[in-house]
Length: 209
Image (cartoon, rainbow, N blue to C red; front, side, top):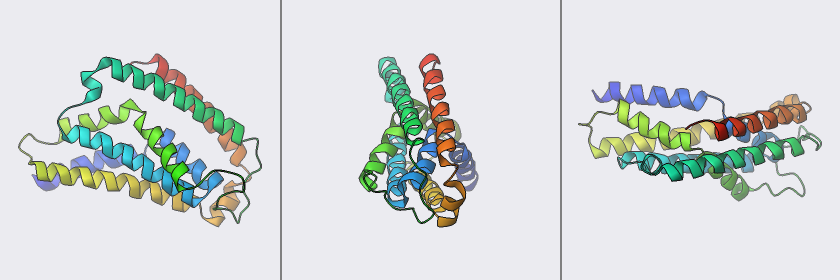
């Protein structure tokens, strides 16, 4: 039962990772605009936030489901944060695109590892759907007879899978060839991403989570 249960859990998790969302847009922009160090920091922050929700799901409870007021507050915080990110993307699109030799911090831009870590953590932690996703994943796909040690192994695998996937995306996007190919079109991409984030903020504010 262990292999089939793990494969089912891992497959559903990887499909979720491959689905583009606010975290994906943040990672791409971090790698192209601010460089590899900032992007890896963002990947680590996203992984830490996911790890927090995984730990809650492993504990067999969800603060989000137990407290509708907390869920509503997180929904509004997430909406505001996504709208703010969208505004930052729009503002950033007015700046010159990075040079092909980039992939490093631009002058005058606070884009170190710590800045990326904070941005990534907030992006993932303020999304209440992450908590609901992990709780549903463990509830529906992990049997009641599965031991605590095995559940912990599942959780650790998913935590490192999130970081490895996101870090690989950052490393790929921060290659000089990729920057040279996409750099000139980056302002247009940022405008589109900014509009998508603002739309996502509006939909999240209006929708029931």
